[in-house]
Length: 293
Image (cartoon, rainbow, N blue to C red; front, side, top):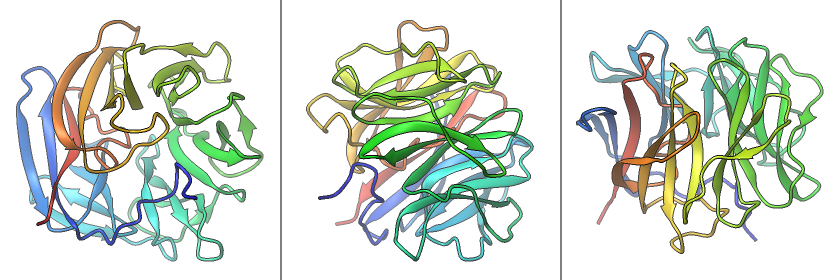
Protein backbone atom coordinates (compact mmCIF):
# COMPACT_ATOMS: atom_id res chain seq x y z
CA UNK A 1 0.00 0.00 0.00
CA UNK A 2 1.35 3.41 -0.94
CA UNK A 3 1.84 5.77 2.00
CA UNK A 4 0.66 9.35 1.80
CA UNK A 5 4.17 10.78 1.77
CA UNK A 6 5.79 8.56 -0.85
CA UNK A 7 7.42 10.35 -3.79
CA UNK A 8 5.44 10.76 -6.95
CA UNK A 9 5.70 7.61 -9.12
CA UNK A 10 6.30 9.26 -12.47
CA UNK A 11 9.03 9.46 -15.07
CA UNK A 12 8.74 13.21 -14.94
CA UNK A 13 8.24 13.62 -18.67
CA UNK A 14 4.46 13.22 -18.83
CA UNK A 15 3.79 16.90 -18.14
CA UNK A 16 4.73 20.35 -19.33
CA UNK A 17 5.75 22.58 -16.41
CA UNK A 18 5.27 26.34 -16.32
CA UNK A 19 7.41 28.33 -13.89
CA UNK A 20 5.43 31.45 -13.03
CA UNK A 21 5.16 34.36 -10.64
CA UNK A 22 2.09 36.27 -9.50
CA UNK A 23 1.78 39.76 -8.06
CA UNK A 24 -0.27 39.35 -4.89
CA UNK A 25 -1.90 42.80 -5.24
CA UNK A 26 -2.73 42.98 -8.94
CA UNK A 27 -3.03 39.24 -9.58
CA UNK A 28 -0.87 39.60 -12.68
CA UNK A 29 0.79 36.33 -13.68
CA UNK A 30 4.19 36.26 -15.40
CA UNK A 31 5.46 33.18 -17.21
CA UNK A 32 9.19 32.85 -16.62
CA UNK A 33 9.89 29.57 -18.42
CA UNK A 34 8.30 26.45 -19.89
CA UNK A 35 9.84 23.01 -19.33
CA UNK A 36 9.17 19.84 -21.28
CA UNK A 37 9.44 17.82 -18.07
CA UNK A 38 8.41 17.89 -14.43
CA UNK A 39 9.84 20.68 -12.30
CA UNK A 40 8.62 21.48 -8.79
CA UNK A 41 8.71 23.78 -5.81
CA UNK A 42 10.56 27.06 -6.48
CA UNK A 43 12.43 28.71 -3.58
CA UNK A 44 13.23 32.38 -4.10
CA UNK A 45 16.80 33.31 -3.13
CA UNK A 46 17.38 36.18 -0.74
CA UNK A 47 18.86 38.43 -3.44
CA UNK A 48 15.78 37.98 -5.62
CA UNK A 49 17.85 36.83 -8.59
CA UNK A 50 17.25 33.06 -8.64
CA UNK A 51 14.61 30.42 -8.09
CA UNK A 52 15.70 27.02 -6.81
CA UNK A 53 13.61 24.10 -8.05
CA UNK A 54 13.85 20.30 -8.23
CA UNK A 55 13.51 18.14 -11.31
CA UNK A 56 14.07 14.40 -11.81
CA UNK A 57 15.88 14.07 -8.49
CA UNK A 58 18.25 17.02 -8.70
CA UNK A 59 18.21 20.69 -7.70
CA UNK A 60 18.57 23.55 -10.17
CA UNK A 61 19.04 27.31 -9.96
CA UNK A 62 16.91 29.29 -12.41
CA UNK A 63 18.45 32.68 -13.17
CA UNK A 64 15.54 35.09 -13.57
CA UNK A 65 17.43 37.67 -15.62
CA UNK A 66 18.67 35.21 -18.26
CA UNK A 67 16.06 32.45 -18.07
CA UNK A 68 18.82 29.85 -17.76
CA UNK A 69 18.93 26.91 -15.36
CA UNK A 70 22.08 25.40 -13.87
CA UNK A 71 22.31 22.19 -11.89
CA UNK A 72 23.41 22.39 -8.26
CA UNK A 73 25.97 19.65 -7.67
CA UNK A 74 24.97 17.51 -4.71
CA UNK A 75 27.21 14.44 -4.77
CA UNK A 76 25.23 11.25 -4.25
CA UNK A 77 22.05 13.12 -3.27
CA UNK A 78 20.37 12.85 -6.67
CA UNK A 79 16.97 11.49 -5.60
CA UNK A 80 15.71 14.70 -4.05
CA UNK A 81 12.00 15.45 -3.89
CA UNK A 82 10.17 18.77 -3.57
CA UNK A 83 11.05 19.28 0.10
CA UNK A 84 13.98 21.72 -0.13
CA UNK A 85 14.68 24.77 1.99
CA UNK A 86 17.38 27.44 1.89
CA UNK A 87 19.32 28.37 5.00
CA UNK A 88 18.53 31.88 6.28
CA UNK A 89 21.90 33.17 5.04
CA UNK A 90 21.43 31.36 1.70
CA UNK A 91 24.79 29.58 1.96
CA UNK A 92 23.28 26.08 2.21
CA UNK A 93 20.26 24.12 1.11
CA UNK A 94 18.55 21.30 2.97
CA UNK A 95 16.83 18.53 1.00
CA UNK A 96 14.88 15.33 1.40
CA UNK A 97 16.83 12.69 -0.54
CA UNK A 98 15.69 9.09 -0.99
CA UNK A 99 18.69 7.00 -0.02
CA UNK A 100 19.94 4.22 -2.27
CA UNK A 101 20.12 1.72 0.61
CA UNK A 102 16.40 1.55 1.40
CA UNK A 103 14.74 4.17 -0.80
CA UNK A 104 13.46 6.13 2.19
CA UNK A 105 13.62 9.89 2.58
CA UNK A 106 16.22 11.40 4.87
CA UNK A 107 17.31 15.00 5.33
CA UNK A 108 20.67 16.24 4.09
CA UNK A 109 22.34 19.63 3.71
CA UNK A 110 24.96 20.84 1.24
CA UNK A 111 26.30 24.20 0.04
CA UNK A 112 23.94 26.15 -2.20
CA UNK A 113 26.82 26.65 -4.64
CA UNK A 114 27.14 22.84 -4.75
CA UNK A 115 29.07 20.34 -2.69
CA UNK A 116 29.03 17.13 -0.69
CA UNK A 117 25.84 16.31 1.23
CA UNK A 118 25.81 15.87 5.02
CA UNK A 119 23.26 13.51 6.59
CA UNK A 120 21.13 15.19 9.26
CA UNK A 121 18.40 12.63 10.09
CA UNK A 122 19.51 9.04 10.48
CA UNK A 123 15.91 7.93 11.04
CA UNK A 124 13.53 7.56 8.09
CA UNK A 125 11.26 8.49 6.54
CA UNK A 126 11.86 12.18 7.25
CA UNK A 127 10.53 14.96 5.02
CA UNK A 128 12.04 18.42 5.41
CA UNK A 129 9.92 21.58 5.46
CA UNK A 130 11.48 24.40 7.49
CA UNK A 131 14.68 26.08 8.64
CA UNK A 132 14.50 28.36 11.66
CA UNK A 133 15.35 32.04 11.04
CA UNK A 134 18.33 31.85 13.41
CA UNK A 135 19.75 28.98 11.38
CA UNK A 136 19.94 26.51 14.25
CA UNK A 137 17.00 24.15 13.68
CA UNK A 138 15.22 22.20 10.96
CA UNK A 139 11.53 21.25 11.08
CA UNK A 140 10.08 18.25 9.29
CA UNK A 141 7.37 15.64 9.02
CA UNK A 142 8.38 12.08 9.89
CA UNK A 143 6.78 8.69 10.30
CA UNK A 144 7.63 7.17 13.66
CA UNK A 145 5.75 4.19 15.09
CA UNK A 146 3.16 4.26 12.32
CA UNK A 147 2.14 7.92 12.72
CA UNK A 148 3.18 11.05 10.81
CA UNK A 149 4.11 13.82 13.22
CA UNK A 150 6.15 17.00 13.28
CA UNK A 151 9.70 17.05 14.60
CA UNK A 152 12.63 19.42 14.91
CA UNK A 153 16.34 18.66 14.94
CA UNK A 154 19.52 20.78 15.18
CA UNK A 155 20.57 21.90 11.70
CA UNK A 156 23.97 20.29 12.27
CA UNK A 157 22.34 16.99 13.28
CA UNK A 158 21.59 15.51 16.67
CA UNK A 159 18.57 14.31 18.63
CA UNK A 160 15.12 14.97 17.18
CA UNK A 161 12.26 16.46 19.21
CA UNK A 162 8.64 15.48 18.57
CA UNK A 163 6.19 18.41 18.59
CA UNK A 164 2.83 16.84 17.62
CA UNK A 165 1.26 13.73 19.09
CA UNK A 166 -2.05 13.33 17.28
CA UNK A 167 -3.34 10.51 15.10
CA UNK A 168 -3.37 11.15 11.36
CA UNK A 169 -1.08 13.19 9.17
CA UNK A 170 0.65 16.29 10.54
CA UNK A 171 2.77 17.82 7.79
CA UNK A 172 4.39 20.89 6.24
CA UNK A 173 5.99 22.52 9.33
CA UNK A 174 7.53 25.89 8.47
CA UNK A 175 8.79 28.67 10.71
CA UNK A 176 7.40 32.18 10.81
CA UNK A 177 9.99 34.88 9.97
CA UNK A 178 10.30 35.90 13.62
CA UNK A 179 10.92 32.27 14.67
CA UNK A 180 8.12 32.35 17.26
CA UNK A 181 5.74 30.00 15.45
CA UNK A 182 5.68 26.91 13.29
CA UNK A 183 2.87 26.74 10.76
CA UNK A 184 1.73 23.30 9.58
CA UNK A 185 -1.24 21.35 8.26
CA UNK A 186 -3.11 18.55 9.99
CA UNK A 187 -6.08 16.23 9.44
CA UNK A 188 -6.87 15.99 13.14
CA UNK A 189 -10.27 17.68 12.71
CA UNK A 190 -11.29 15.68 9.62
CA UNK A 191 -10.25 17.69 6.57
CA UNK A 192 -6.70 18.92 6.06
CA UNK A 193 -6.48 22.35 7.70
CA UNK A 194 -3.80 24.93 8.44
CA UNK A 195 -2.53 25.12 12.02
CA UNK A 196 -0.06 27.21 13.98
CA UNK A 197 1.90 26.42 17.13
CA UNK A 198 4.67 27.94 19.18
CA UNK A 199 8.13 26.88 18.07
CA UNK A 200 8.37 24.54 21.07
CA UNK A 201 5.15 22.76 20.06
CA UNK A 202 2.87 24.42 22.61
CA UNK A 203 -0.46 26.16 21.90
CA UNK A 204 -1.47 24.35 18.72
CA UNK A 205 -4.24 26.45 17.13
CA UNK A 206 -6.35 25.77 14.04
CA UNK A 207 -6.17 28.67 11.54
CA UNK A 208 -8.43 27.59 8.64
CA UNK A 209 -11.95 26.21 9.02
CA UNK A 210 -13.49 25.99 5.55
CA UNK A 211 -14.78 22.92 3.73
CA UNK A 212 -11.57 22.36 1.73
CA UNK A 213 -8.26 20.56 2.15
CA UNK A 214 -5.57 23.14 2.85
CA UNK A 215 -1.84 22.38 2.58
CA UNK A 216 1.63 23.86 3.00
CA UNK A 217 1.25 27.26 4.71
CA UNK A 218 4.05 29.71 3.89
CA UNK A 219 4.40 32.98 5.80
CA UNK A 220 5.52 36.03 3.82
CA UNK A 221 8.94 37.52 4.71
CA UNK A 222 7.26 40.57 6.25
CA UNK A 223 5.22 38.24 8.47
CA UNK A 224 1.89 39.68 7.34
CA UNK A 225 0.34 37.01 5.11
CA UNK A 226 0.20 33.26 4.66
CA UNK A 227 -0.05 31.55 1.28
CA UNK A 228 -1.27 27.97 1.05
CA UNK A 229 -2.52 25.39 -1.44
CA UNK A 230 -6.15 24.25 -1.49
CA UNK A 231 -7.80 21.13 -2.91
CA UNK A 232 -11.57 20.84 -3.19
CA UNK A 233 -13.34 18.68 -0.64
CA UNK A 234 -14.13 15.30 -2.17
CA UNK A 235 -11.58 15.76 -4.94
CA UNK A 236 -8.82 14.19 -2.85
CA UNK A 237 -8.54 12.31 0.41
CA UNK A 238 -7.82 14.75 3.26
CA UNK A 239 -4.35 13.30 3.78
CA UNK A 240 -3.28 13.30 0.14
CA UNK A 241 -1.79 16.05 -2.04
CA UNK A 242 -1.57 14.58 -5.55
CA UNK A 243 -0.48 16.18 -8.79
CA UNK A 244 -2.70 17.12 -11.71
CA UNK A 245 -5.73 18.56 -9.94
CA UNK A 246 -7.64 21.79 -10.10
CA UNK A 247 -6.35 23.68 -7.07
CA UNK A 248 -6.20 27.18 -5.61
CA UNK A 249 -3.49 29.30 -4.07
CA UNK A 250 -5.04 31.24 -1.21
CA UNK A 251 -3.87 34.07 1.05
CA UNK A 252 -4.88 34.78 4.63
CA UNK A 253 -3.66 37.22 7.29
CA UNK A 254 -1.03 35.67 9.57
CA UNK A 255 -3.08 36.84 12.55
CA UNK A 256 -5.98 34.73 11.24
CA UNK A 257 -9.17 35.65 9.48
CA UNK A 258 -10.79 35.44 6.07
CA UNK A 259 -8.87 34.05 3.12
CA UNK A 260 -8.93 35.25 -0.46
CA UNK A 261 -8.27 33.13 -3.52
CA UNK A 262 -5.23 34.46 -5.35
CA UNK A 263 -5.58 32.16 -8.36
CA UNK A 264 -6.94 28.86 -9.62
CA UNK A 265 -4.74 26.53 -11.63
CA UNK A 266 -4.00 22.96 -12.74
CA UNK A 267 -1.38 21.66 -10.36
CA UNK A 268 -1.13 20.41 -6.80
CA UNK A 269 1.93 18.39 -5.88
CA UNK A 270 4.91 20.48 -6.96
CA UNK A 271 3.03 23.78 -7.24
CA UNK A 272 3.70 25.34 -3.83
CA UNK A 273 5.42 22.76 -1.61
CA UNK A 274 8.08 25.19 -0.37
CA UNK A 275 8.10 28.82 0.67
CA UNK A 276 7.97 30.63 -2.68
CA UNK A 277 7.59 34.23 -1.50
CA UNK A 278 9.75 36.91 -3.09
CA UNK A 279 12.06 38.69 -0.61
CA UNK A 280 9.90 41.85 -0.75
CA UNK A 281 6.69 39.89 -0.01
CA UNK A 282 5.08 41.20 -3.20
CA UNK A 283 5.14 38.08 -5.36
CA UNK A 284 4.82 34.33 -5.21
CA UNK A 285 6.59 31.88 -7.49
CA UNK A 286 4.76 28.66 -8.37
CA UNK A 287 4.54 25.89 -10.95
CA UNK A 288 1.47 25.06 -13.02
CA UNK A 289 1.19 22.07 -15.32
CA UNK A 290 -0.31 20.69 -18.50
CA UNK A 291 -0.62 17.00 -19.27
CA UNK A 292 0.96 15.88 -22.50
CA UNK A 293 -1.40 14.30 -24.97
